[in-house]
Length: 407
Image (cartoon, rainbow, N blue to C red; front, side, top):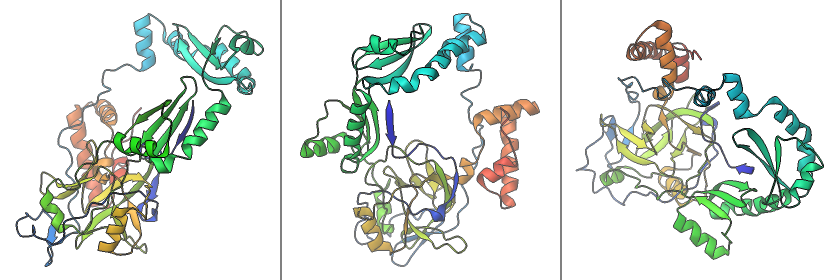
């Protein structure tokens, strides 16, 4: 299977937030004209109400530490090899060989792989277990004879069907050329099953309308679509106190994996990334599914899919960089309302304090090493992180001074 991605899901490398000016597209999330709701809307905790009715938020306390230790879903679970060995009455070595194939299989595939791929009718490899491990080698036609010219190993099995490498590349190039118009975030070509697999940043209805208008043949296409975009404001009365809430127009489907860190504040109804040292501040936009709301303590927060929550004014973390489309309606509205500073797309930020806390498995290992209950271990870790924060160390820096992974 050949793949082309426009990003990747998770946070890995630390990137200074203020260096990020790469960007996203956006629908209009413009508050209603006037501030009719200014008198009746309760002012959130930590918010200053301006004379014109627009809100400002500066420094606020970080999101509280969770009081209860997060569950470790891996507790008591076997790794995949151990489980397979137990269920099939095998030793661990036998199970590993059954799952990954014996060394002879891997050696034979390595020996002939380049020659097989050079065959004009070659499609792809696929590992199967029936129950022993075999490698299916797929060709468009004449499969048995083609494979026999290179190998007679019982570990390699000839199969017929699919698109050859040239056809896969042709289809990949075709759909790659349609990615911008179709708002396609990810593209994969499944040569064996003759399928084009798309991650689409719009709803199904929007994508099909585009495809019909452009005459695209979707017979071999399987797509994953974005959900309908949620309301920009959980409470409509909030809108009258915000000059612009810019969001992506489409769901990117795949996000980059660097780590952005910074503090989003609100100044006179506009969201800004707080300036650091000699770096200027930036205007801020959010992800496709972001919603402005209040948390349980009354602070203004941005909620994203799942449990992504960020309190405006605290130090936050987010996947980066994210695309910004300067021609999008939301960015134009943001600039008209808030100025000409560079725009940074923070997607779905979360509390940097919570992002930096150890994984549940780390807590389990920490507890075992110190002969504590998981809750007692959690309480000890949280107390240590809190002490580090008082010394100016935040997030991952604070965590790594308090706990290490024991695996």
